Image (cartoon, rainbow, N blue to C red; front, top):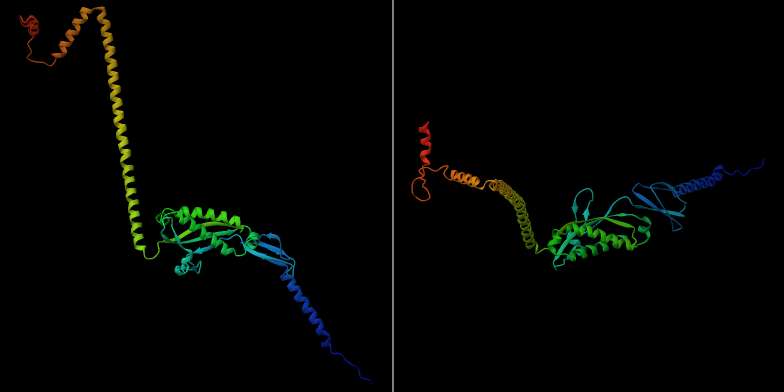
Length: 325
């Protein structure tokens, strides 16, 4: 019986396994490069052959596979920060700060009165336009830091050192945020500065003791001013109240005098009218009333007539009348 050539089954299956593996691998690559996820704190910029296509919101999205379309997720819903004059180690865990002497070049500044001061600050920003953030500027973080440093140097250089150490902190922060946003808008960086926070503001080493004395003197001055204002606020209302009381008393006295004068005038007019009707009678009555008023409380008084001839017998009238009874 003639011999037959038999091909092993395993030899036929090897190409099929390879093809199947390639198909599975292609399916995996197709699936993994066709979908992408955008987190809740992000937005995705989608590119087709390297050209901007769209900006996608959070969620699961489809894209053309095999690198035809690429997505770049940008954290647009969170605040990012840059630190100047120091670096924080282990953010959110422990408040440890790196040695600030390594960053003196970005924090040592000249004030308006030609003094040197060490200013440490932090900026917080948020990405508003992810497309502009990715493509408009080559070195984004360096640009942000350079603009922030130039603005803070400008604001510190416009003020004297005592203001920078004390009263001008809030104005530097608010004006700095506005100026930084105006400059960054011109660069089209796609971000907004949300806050500028000054941290440590201290004089350079070697003059620290002198500045502490100046600061203490300024605090004493402010304390004395506040004490003076407190005394002023306590005494001035009291003095004004006393002045108002005196004015009211004077007005009452004036009203009383005016009313009395008006009453006297009215009485005089009424007497004058009666006098016109009977001058002799009125004259005698007025005379007797005046004499009665003068001698009402007098004792030991002797009355004589106008010719000094004899005593006026007024004092015996009462006795005569009584004896006649």
